[in-house]
Amino acid sequence: MTAEEWTAVRLSLLVAVTATAASLPFGIAIAWLLARGRFWGKSLVDTLVHLPLILPPVVTGYLLLILFGKRGPIGEFLNDTFGIVFAFRWTGAALACAVMGFPLMVRAIRLSIEAIDTRLESAAGTLGAHPLFVFATITLPLSLPGVIAGAILCFAKSMGEFGATITFVSNIPGETQTLPSAIYTLTQVPGGDAGALRLTAISVVISMTALLGSELLARSIGARRVAT
Image (cartoon, rainbow, N blue to C red):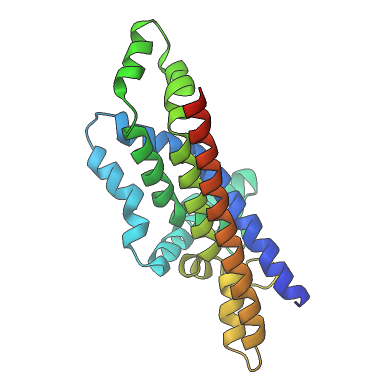
């Protein structure tokens, strides 16, 4: 493999891990809100969360560029106040991947929370436990398989994201060129088929490893519950 191909692999892993880690706390919070919350506008929140699944990825990337570009309302504020720049940076690629993978994460966690018997949470509440304590000691541990599944889905989506990423941060080698972008570039140049095949194989191996690891971890958690 060439140095540029290794750079694309490392950057993809960095982007996917960052996107998953950054969105996980928000994913858990939104999933719990949608699973247990009773409030006006819940359907609207649910729609907004799942909107990236319906919109073309290019549209999502363009909206991110409008909002988080250096002249966008959010991007200009972050740049002037904190010196944070997303457009045409690897951090922007992580943001785009987080947005695209967020609906998958939320859905998996939400289904896991909804499967929990609410009587367990109610019983802890009647004994005087604070809602945050109930969530940390009952809801979150019981929904852990869904949390793991959601994180892995977000990671896998981030590894394969192309449309939103290339629209928001372009395809800059060494800075924003992830695996899908590198594969696309190699397919457009003469003699690039071998490199594209190598990167495709690596992408498949990484995704399969993540999915298998998730399955084994979920089984391990289930076995511990049965043992206890």
